[in-house]
Image (cartoon, rainbow, N blue to C red):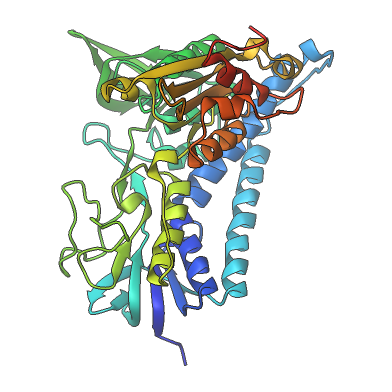
Length: 461
């Protein structure tokens, strides 16, 4: 007989949900995790993982065609096998999905397939089958925002999901939105041969990042061949004879530009529709996000929420940490998420990675501060890698020297950032980083030098 009673039912098996389910099981709870699609959610299936697979493959293809000669490696006849590239991406996704399934078995987490709906009084309705739990955790994630004036058709006007599975390289792609998704997928298709034009409503790309570094990233991407139209609004799109005519407005001028694919990447919205949250009295804000307290409890007794479905950055690692903290609080432990040290990364080449406050935020808070910078071009390992574009920027409090923000534009910036996150987690000063021995030659030495430069003591510039 199928068990229908649990200590915890997790709705959603994305990064937040499946991690929360496993942690709850480790803490001795009888756990079920409900997922209407594939295990791993958006991140694993049509988000973080497949996009990074394509970013890596496309960068290798681009490098083989254009950048190996400087290393003394002569390559001729490089050809793109797009189907092979897509198969590799899908194989990685399949392997990772299977890994979650194996972890569920290992920890005795019950996987329930289907659409879950809140039924009140600790009950969850899954496709007509009723399940009961002492606690319910909503981890339903988010989905792409579709603009009313640029509706998706799945073929010519597409979102990120379709952009991860195109069967041919478009001659020209227009990307609406210069955030992480637009820049990453725009980079993928540009490397594979597409002409890519990015349209952004705001006056700069990567608007959540430190302005100095996002501007530097734009220069690098422009040098690579992407073009940008800032302070520009996409008004409409019309498909005719396999082409998309995009009407855009800039200043007082309206123009029409034609492309083969229009990628709309303007953000994501919480997946709360279909939960029946309103029917059971679940409190949400005007953006459809579930409201929670510091323990991730909603206004409904025994109902919790985490990840993209609650306020805050829509990032997989943020959801994971919230999932762990939520179930630890349920178990009487001191679960906690430090929202001041959430890393943020744009996986272009070079990567742009950040933790803590931007210089603009520090100024807005009227905090006394000092800045140390170090360019990648002054780093020996960067020259060995032929990856000298970028810089490292550290912002510290002027009086206490405590690190307020770390911003890195560099190859492998996402890996380098971990040191910065750890430093901020332990309230390090810039001097702490500066006096920490770094292996030579490494890219991470740029962090040490930037920290030294906070006090104008950098050695190699």
